Image (cartoon, rainbow, N blue to C red; front, top):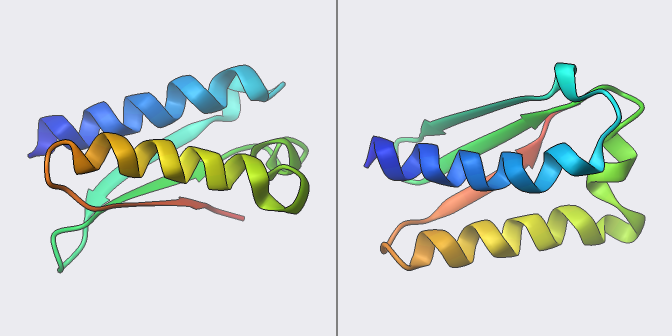
Length: 84
């Protein structure tokens, strides 16, 4: 299960990295909560946060959709959050 969680984090990283200018400040953490759901947290430079969120949240919504689709293939649940 931990390997699949890392695969999801890698997927999210491969989507986010080309979007941002400060790649060296990108931090993606993956953990599993009490309910067994994967939690993927994205930390980016303050200037890049808008690029990851997108207009009206479209980019982060798309990232969440892709992560959920990948997780559902293995019967998993995933939440993607961007940290301030």
